[in-house]
Length: 342
Ligand SMILES: [Zn+2]
Image (tube, rainbow, N blue to C red; front, side, top):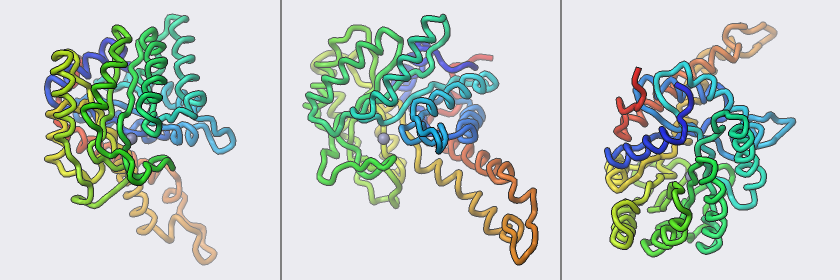
Protein backbone atom coordinates (compact mmCIF):
# COMPACT_ATOMS: atom_id res chain seq x y z
CA UNK A 1 0.00 0.00 0.00
CA UNK A 2 1.11 3.56 -0.40
CA UNK A 3 2.23 5.41 2.71
CA UNK A 4 -0.77 6.11 4.97
CA UNK A 5 -2.53 9.42 4.43
CA UNK A 6 -3.68 11.62 7.30
CA UNK A 7 -7.07 9.96 7.60
CA UNK A 8 -5.61 6.46 7.72
CA UNK A 9 -2.85 7.47 10.12
CA UNK A 10 -5.44 8.96 12.49
CA UNK A 11 -7.46 5.77 12.21
CA UNK A 12 -4.35 3.70 12.96
CA UNK A 13 -3.68 5.69 16.13
CA UNK A 14 -7.32 5.57 17.25
CA UNK A 15 -7.47 1.80 16.80
CA UNK A 16 -4.26 1.29 18.71
CA UNK A 17 -5.46 3.33 21.66
CA UNK A 18 -8.83 1.60 21.73
CA UNK A 19 -7.32 -1.84 21.24
CA UNK A 20 -4.44 -1.38 23.72
CA UNK A 21 -1.72 -2.13 21.21
CA UNK A 22 1.04 0.04 19.75
CA UNK A 23 2.93 0.50 16.51
CA UNK A 24 6.65 -0.02 16.43
CA UNK A 25 8.33 3.15 15.15
CA UNK A 26 11.65 1.97 13.80
CA UNK A 27 14.56 4.27 13.07
CA UNK A 28 16.01 3.69 9.62
CA UNK A 29 19.14 5.11 8.00
CA UNK A 30 19.29 3.43 4.59
CA UNK A 31 17.31 1.67 1.90
CA UNK A 32 18.25 -1.67 3.44
CA UNK A 33 16.94 -0.84 6.91
CA UNK A 34 13.76 0.70 5.48
CA UNK A 35 13.16 -2.42 3.38
CA UNK A 36 13.71 -4.58 6.47
CA UNK A 37 11.00 -2.72 8.37
CA UNK A 38 8.52 -3.04 5.50
CA UNK A 39 9.26 -6.76 5.27
CA UNK A 40 8.85 -7.31 9.01
CA UNK A 41 5.60 -5.34 9.19
CA UNK A 42 4.14 -7.09 6.15
CA UNK A 43 4.97 -10.54 7.53
CA UNK A 44 3.30 -9.52 10.81
CA UNK A 45 0.25 -8.14 8.99
CA UNK A 46 0.74 -5.00 11.05
CA UNK A 47 0.85 -1.36 10.08
CA UNK A 48 3.74 0.61 11.51
CA UNK A 49 5.91 3.67 11.51
CA UNK A 50 9.24 4.28 9.83
CA UNK A 51 11.20 7.15 11.32
CA UNK A 52 14.34 9.11 10.53
CA UNK A 53 16.42 10.93 13.12
CA UNK A 54 18.56 14.02 12.58
CA UNK A 55 21.64 11.79 12.56
CA UNK A 56 19.92 9.22 10.34
CA UNK A 57 19.03 11.90 7.79
CA UNK A 58 22.55 13.29 7.86
CA UNK A 59 23.99 9.81 7.34
CA UNK A 60 21.58 8.98 4.50
CA UNK A 61 22.57 12.13 2.59
CA UNK A 62 26.17 10.93 2.31
CA UNK A 63 29.44 11.87 3.96
CA UNK A 64 30.17 14.63 1.45
CA UNK A 65 26.76 16.31 1.80
CA UNK A 66 25.65 15.82 5.41
CA UNK A 67 22.23 17.44 4.98
CA UNK A 68 19.71 15.88 7.38
CA UNK A 69 16.66 17.11 5.45
CA UNK A 70 18.01 15.80 2.15
CA UNK A 71 18.71 12.37 3.62
CA UNK A 72 15.26 12.22 5.23
CA UNK A 73 13.60 13.17 1.93
CA UNK A 74 15.57 10.48 0.07
CA UNK A 75 14.51 7.78 2.51
CA UNK A 76 10.89 8.97 2.50
CA UNK A 77 10.74 9.00 -1.30
CA UNK A 78 12.06 5.45 -1.38
CA UNK A 79 9.48 4.35 1.19
CA UNK A 80 6.65 6.02 -0.77
CA UNK A 81 7.61 3.93 -3.81
CA UNK A 82 8.53 0.67 -2.09
CA UNK A 83 5.59 0.62 0.35
CA UNK A 84 3.20 0.13 -2.57
CA UNK A 85 4.51 -3.42 -2.88
CA UNK A 86 3.59 -4.40 0.70
CA UNK A 87 0.07 -5.25 1.94
CA UNK A 88 0.17 -2.96 5.00
CA UNK A 89 0.15 0.76 5.77
CA UNK A 90 3.23 2.56 6.95
CA UNK A 91 3.49 6.12 8.26
CA UNK A 92 6.60 8.26 7.94
CA UNK A 93 7.85 10.20 10.94
CA UNK A 94 10.93 12.15 11.99
CA UNK A 95 12.41 11.52 15.43
CA UNK A 96 13.88 13.86 18.10
CA UNK A 97 14.51 17.32 16.67
CA UNK A 98 15.72 19.84 19.22
CA UNK A 99 14.81 23.52 18.90
CA UNK A 100 18.16 24.45 17.37
CA UNK A 101 17.74 21.84 14.63
CA UNK A 102 14.17 22.67 13.56
CA UNK A 103 15.46 24.85 10.71
CA UNK A 104 17.60 22.00 9.44
CA UNK A 105 15.05 19.19 9.54
CA UNK A 106 11.41 19.76 10.46
CA UNK A 107 10.87 23.13 8.78
CA UNK A 108 12.39 22.13 5.40
CA UNK A 109 10.41 18.88 5.50
CA UNK A 110 7.13 20.68 6.21
CA UNK A 111 7.95 23.05 3.35
CA UNK A 112 8.55 20.05 1.12
CA UNK A 113 5.13 18.70 2.11
CA UNK A 114 3.51 22.10 1.46
CA UNK A 115 5.08 22.13 -1.99
CA UNK A 116 3.78 18.64 -2.71
CA UNK A 117 0.27 19.47 -1.48
CA UNK A 118 0.17 22.51 -3.75
CA UNK A 119 0.89 20.12 -6.64
CA UNK A 120 -1.86 17.74 -5.50
CA UNK A 121 0.62 15.12 -4.28
CA UNK A 122 0.52 13.28 -0.94
CA UNK A 123 2.39 14.57 2.10
CA UNK A 124 6.03 13.54 2.31
CA UNK A 125 5.98 12.72 6.05
CA UNK A 126 2.96 12.05 8.28
CA UNK A 127 4.38 13.38 11.53
CA UNK A 128 7.39 15.04 13.08
CA UNK A 129 8.72 15.18 16.59
CA UNK A 130 9.80 18.44 18.18
CA UNK A 131 11.91 17.67 21.24
CA UNK A 132 11.80 20.66 23.54
CA UNK A 133 12.39 18.56 26.63
CA UNK A 134 15.63 20.39 27.40
CA UNK A 135 13.70 23.68 27.64
CA UNK A 136 11.44 24.87 30.45
CA UNK A 137 7.93 23.52 29.78
CA UNK A 138 6.55 26.95 28.91
CA UNK A 139 9.15 27.55 26.18
CA UNK A 140 8.77 23.96 24.98
CA UNK A 141 5.02 24.51 24.53
CA UNK A 142 5.40 28.00 23.03
CA UNK A 143 7.37 26.46 20.17
CA UNK A 144 5.07 23.42 20.00
CA UNK A 145 1.97 25.60 19.55
CA UNK A 146 3.52 27.49 16.62
CA UNK A 147 4.45 24.20 15.00
CA UNK A 148 1.05 22.66 15.70
CA UNK A 149 -0.73 25.52 13.93
CA UNK A 150 1.44 24.98 10.88
CA UNK A 151 0.99 21.22 11.08
CA UNK A 152 -2.79 21.41 11.42
CA UNK A 153 -3.04 23.26 8.10
CA UNK A 154 -1.06 20.51 6.41
CA UNK A 155 -2.59 17.33 7.89
CA UNK A 156 0.56 16.64 9.88
CA UNK A 157 0.73 15.23 13.40
CA UNK A 158 3.14 16.68 15.94
CA UNK A 159 4.95 14.65 18.56
CA UNK A 160 6.26 16.50 21.58
CA UNK A 161 8.04 15.46 24.75
CA UNK A 162 7.38 16.50 28.31
CA UNK A 163 10.01 15.27 30.75
CA UNK A 164 13.42 13.99 29.72
CA UNK A 165 14.38 10.58 28.38
CA UNK A 166 17.66 9.59 29.96
CA UNK A 167 20.66 8.04 28.24
CA UNK A 168 22.04 8.98 24.86
CA UNK A 169 20.58 8.96 21.37
CA UNK A 170 22.16 10.36 18.26
CA UNK A 171 24.87 11.93 20.42
CA UNK A 172 22.34 13.90 22.49
CA UNK A 173 22.47 13.03 26.17
CA UNK A 174 19.62 13.36 28.61
CA UNK A 175 21.03 15.40 31.47
CA UNK A 176 21.87 13.72 34.73
CA UNK A 177 19.26 14.52 37.36
CA UNK A 178 16.86 15.69 34.64
CA UNK A 179 13.13 15.08 34.90
CA UNK A 180 12.97 11.39 34.08
CA UNK A 181 9.40 11.19 35.36
CA UNK A 182 6.72 13.44 33.88
CA UNK A 183 4.09 14.71 36.30
CA UNK A 184 0.31 14.92 35.75
CA UNK A 185 0.65 18.70 36.29
CA UNK A 186 3.04 18.89 33.32
CA UNK A 187 0.88 16.83 31.01
CA UNK A 188 -2.24 18.74 32.03
CA UNK A 189 -0.38 21.90 31.07
CA UNK A 190 0.35 20.30 27.67
CA UNK A 191 -3.37 19.71 27.15
CA UNK A 192 -4.34 23.20 28.35
CA UNK A 193 -1.92 24.84 25.92
CA UNK A 194 -2.12 22.55 22.87
CA UNK A 195 -5.86 21.98 22.87
CA UNK A 196 -6.21 25.65 21.89
CA UNK A 197 -5.24 24.67 18.35
CA UNK A 198 -8.55 23.37 17.02
CA UNK A 199 -8.68 20.06 15.14
CA UNK A 200 -4.95 19.51 15.55
CA UNK A 201 -3.56 16.14 16.54
CA UNK A 202 -0.47 15.46 18.55
CA UNK A 203 1.36 12.62 20.20
CA UNK A 204 2.91 12.97 23.62
CA UNK A 205 6.14 11.38 24.77
CA UNK A 206 5.66 11.46 28.52
CA UNK A 207 8.59 10.04 30.42
CA UNK A 208 8.28 7.40 33.08
CA UNK A 209 11.90 6.50 33.74
CA UNK A 210 12.75 5.72 30.10
CA UNK A 211 16.39 5.62 29.07
CA UNK A 212 17.74 5.72 25.53
CA UNK A 213 20.33 3.14 24.56
CA UNK A 214 20.76 -0.37 25.79
CA UNK A 215 20.58 -1.60 29.34
CA UNK A 216 20.46 -5.05 30.83
CA UNK A 217 16.95 -6.13 31.82
CA UNK A 218 16.14 -4.88 35.30
CA UNK A 219 18.44 -1.86 35.04
CA UNK A 220 15.72 0.48 33.83
CA UNK A 221 13.28 1.48 36.55
CA UNK A 222 10.10 2.18 34.66
CA UNK A 223 6.98 3.44 36.39
CA UNK A 224 4.20 3.04 33.81
CA UNK A 225 1.65 4.04 36.47
CA UNK A 226 2.80 7.62 35.85
CA UNK A 227 1.14 7.39 32.45
CA UNK A 228 -2.11 6.33 34.07
CA UNK A 229 -1.93 9.26 36.49
CA UNK A 230 -1.37 11.64 33.56
CA UNK A 231 -4.33 10.19 31.64
CA UNK A 232 -6.63 10.21 34.68
CA UNK A 233 -5.84 13.83 35.34
CA UNK A 234 -6.49 15.03 31.77
CA UNK A 235 -9.69 12.97 31.44
CA UNK A 236 -10.99 14.33 34.75
CA UNK A 237 -10.43 17.88 33.55
CA UNK A 238 -11.43 17.66 29.88
CA UNK A 239 -13.32 14.42 29.38
CA UNK A 240 -12.58 11.17 27.61
CA UNK A 241 -11.82 12.72 24.22
CA UNK A 242 -8.83 14.52 25.74
CA UNK A 243 -7.05 11.25 26.56
CA UNK A 244 -3.46 11.40 25.25
CA UNK A 245 -1.92 9.35 22.48
CA UNK A 246 1.35 8.42 24.16
CA UNK A 247 4.77 7.54 22.78
CA UNK A 248 7.23 5.22 24.50
CA UNK A 249 10.86 6.24 24.02
CA UNK A 250 13.92 4.43 25.32
CA UNK A 251 12.26 1.04 25.69
CA UNK A 252 15.27 -1.22 25.00
CA UNK A 253 15.80 -3.61 27.88
CA UNK A 254 12.33 -2.97 29.32
CA UNK A 255 10.44 -5.77 31.00
CA UNK A 256 7.56 -7.02 28.86
CA UNK A 257 5.06 -6.49 31.68
CA UNK A 258 6.06 -2.80 31.87
CA UNK A 259 5.58 -2.47 28.13
CA UNK A 260 2.15 -4.09 28.32
CA UNK A 261 1.12 -1.91 31.22
CA UNK A 262 2.14 1.15 29.19
CA UNK A 263 -0.07 -0.08 26.31
CA UNK A 264 -3.01 -0.24 28.69
CA UNK A 265 -2.43 3.43 29.57
CA UNK A 266 -2.52 4.69 26.01
CA UNK A 267 0.91 4.17 24.47
CA UNK A 268 0.26 3.89 20.71
CA UNK A 269 3.79 4.27 19.35
CA UNK A 270 6.94 2.68 20.67
CA UNK A 271 10.27 3.86 19.31
CA UNK A 272 12.77 1.16 18.48
CA UNK A 273 16.32 1.87 17.44
CA UNK A 274 18.93 0.14 19.61
CA UNK A 275 17.32 -3.31 19.30
CA UNK A 276 17.08 -3.17 15.51
CA UNK A 277 20.62 -1.75 15.27
CA UNK A 278 21.88 -4.83 17.09
CA UNK A 279 19.70 -7.16 15.02
CA UNK A 280 21.21 -5.63 11.87
CA UNK A 281 24.82 -5.93 12.97
CA UNK A 282 24.66 -9.37 14.61
CA UNK A 283 24.62 -11.47 11.40
CA UNK A 284 27.22 -9.20 9.79
CA UNK A 285 29.61 -9.84 12.68
CA UNK A 286 28.87 -13.55 12.36
CA UNK A 287 29.55 -13.46 8.61
CA UNK A 288 32.86 -11.62 9.05
CA UNK A 289 34.16 -13.91 11.80
CA UNK A 290 33.15 -17.10 10.01
CA UNK A 291 34.53 -15.99 6.67
CA UNK A 292 37.65 -14.20 7.81
CA UNK A 293 39.79 -15.65 5.02
CA UNK A 294 37.16 -14.86 2.41
CA UNK A 295 36.19 -11.30 3.29
CA UNK A 296 39.85 -10.29 3.73
CA UNK A 297 42.80 -10.75 1.45
CA UNK A 298 44.99 -12.73 3.84
CA UNK A 299 48.62 -13.66 3.20
CA UNK A 300 48.70 -12.53 -0.43
CA UNK A 301 45.44 -14.38 -1.27
CA UNK A 302 42.58 -12.63 -3.11
CA UNK A 303 39.68 -13.36 -0.78
CA UNK A 304 36.28 -14.42 -2.13
CA UNK A 305 34.32 -11.85 -4.11
CA UNK A 306 30.96 -13.37 -3.14
CA UNK A 307 31.84 -13.13 0.55
CA UNK A 308 32.84 -9.50 0.54
CA UNK A 309 30.10 -8.32 -1.83
CA UNK A 310 28.12 -6.05 0.56
CA UNK A 311 24.87 -7.57 -0.72
CA UNK A 312 25.82 -10.89 0.85
CA UNK A 313 25.96 -9.62 4.42
CA UNK A 314 23.47 -6.76 4.02
CA UNK A 315 20.86 -9.29 2.93
CA UNK A 316 21.52 -11.26 6.12
CA UNK A 317 21.20 -8.00 8.08
CA UNK A 318 17.94 -7.08 6.33
CA UNK A 319 16.43 -10.49 7.10
CA UNK A 320 17.51 -10.38 10.76
CA UNK A 321 16.20 -6.84 11.21
CA UNK A 322 12.85 -7.87 9.70
CA UNK A 323 12.68 -10.70 12.27
CA UNK A 324 13.36 -8.21 15.09
CA UNK A 325 10.58 -5.99 13.76
CA UNK A 326 8.25 -8.99 13.86
CA UNK A 327 9.20 -9.61 17.49
CA UNK A 328 8.49 -5.94 18.27
CA UNK A 329 5.06 -6.18 16.65
CA UNK A 330 4.26 -9.30 18.69
CA UNK A 331 5.41 -7.68 21.95
CA UNK A 332 3.30 -4.61 21.17
CA UNK A 333 0.28 -6.85 20.45
CA UNK A 334 -0.04 -5.55 16.90
CA UNK A 335 0.17 -8.77 14.85
CA UNK A 336 -2.68 -9.07 12.36
CA UNK A 337 -4.05 -5.61 13.07
CA UNK A 338 -3.41 -3.97 9.70
CA UNK A 339 -6.14 -1.69 8.40
CA UNK A 340 -5.30 -2.72 4.88
CA UNK A 341 -7.87 -4.92 3.20
CA UNK A 342 -6.77 -6.75 0.08
ZN1 LIG B 1 13.54 9.00 21.86
